[in-house]
Every structure is written in structure tokens, then in C-alpha cells.
Image 1 (cartoon, helix red, strand yellow):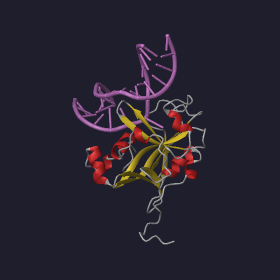
Image 2 (tube, chains in turn green, purple, yellow):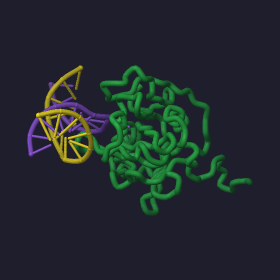
Image 3 (cartoon, chains in turn purple, cyan, brown):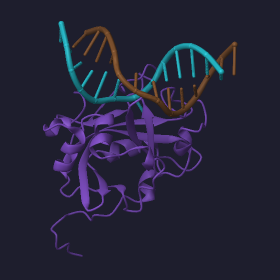
Image 4 (cartoon, chains in turn brown, cyan, red):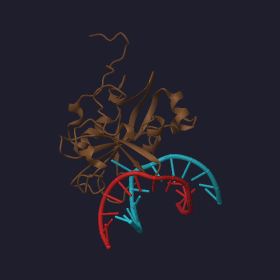
Length: 203
DNA sequence: CTAAAGATGTCCT
DNA sequence: GGACATCTTTAGA
């Protein structure tokens, strides 16, 4: 089928099967995808350029390491849902759940490269530099107006929040490093970013 | 019930 | 490179 808009990828959300895989694999595959947020008639979009994988059992840095709690229960549920948590008394962070039901796993979205709705993001962030709009896990939730209200939201319905393929996917080099802001689990190289992309939180 | 840490961002020197 | 804001969640008494 020919898409009259010229886009090479349909504007539909990634399927459940994308998320129902190992957390690390899902994390790598999320790079280059587009995070989409609908705010009424406004649509905010940005390419995912940096992520981190967290899972349970063998990962002491994960919120799910100590077993299920009120906060982390979404990580144990159906894959393809948003896990949004509040931290440092003022910040929200967005994760997407992975792994089959009953097995905890989530990918922290650490940075996106804004592509649509930039004016709106600037209002929400009080910044005019595009590079500073969403180059950090709490910066992007502020730019995209993502709060605890979206915790457990289903990302496969194409509603207020979802992830889709990029319009013009380009070849990219993926770099892996130790995760940021944790004190344990530093030996696992589960932070993934697009090499040389200026919109990541740190090089 | 109480205490301490936290998957951070911003401003300052 | 370091201080600090700010408060939920969690673990432990």
C-alpha cells in the first residue's frame, strides 16, 4: 500500500509483541523510535536517543529487585504499559514495561530528540534551547507533560501516549555504557544511546 | 511510626 | 565540581 503522506512508516503504535521480549533487547530496539504524546489537538513527538534497561531478580539497581510493591507493580504486569514514578520530591520518570506478564522489566526513557510540538515543549519547560528540552529522564516528562496520571497507561492503543516507528529511519551506531544515577548494578552495561547524537543527557 | 534514600535538575562557584 | 530543593516510597523498629 502506498502512503499518500510519503511517510515510510505508519503512524500506529508498536504492538504488544514488541514489548513482550527481554528488557535489554527491547531497550536497544527503542532507539530511533518516536515517542508520541497527544495533548488535546496538540501532538508532541520526539525520537528516542537514550534508554536504560532495568529488570528484576538479577538486577540490584531495579525497583523490582526486592519483589512486588505498590509502586513497582506495573513492572510485573502486561508488557507495553507506562511505568511512571516520582522521585527526588519533584521529578517524574517514564519507563515502558517489557517481559511477559509476571516477569518484571522496564526501560527508562532517558532522552528524546524533539521533532514535533516544540513550541508547546518550550512552554512546559521554560527553555528555548531545543537541546535542553528533553535531554534527561525528568526533563522529557516535563516537556511531554507526563505525570503519575499516566502510570500503567497502555501504550498499544494509540491514545494519549504511545511509541511508533520513525518516519525516516537512518542507520545508527548504538553505544552501551553503565547506567547513570545508581549505586549498584554498575557492572551491567545497560544504558544505550545513539552515538554522537547531541540530544542525549551525557556523552 | 520514623528515618533515610532516591533511575534528577538547576543554580552557583 | 558541588550544594540544594523537595516529598514519596520503602525498610525497619
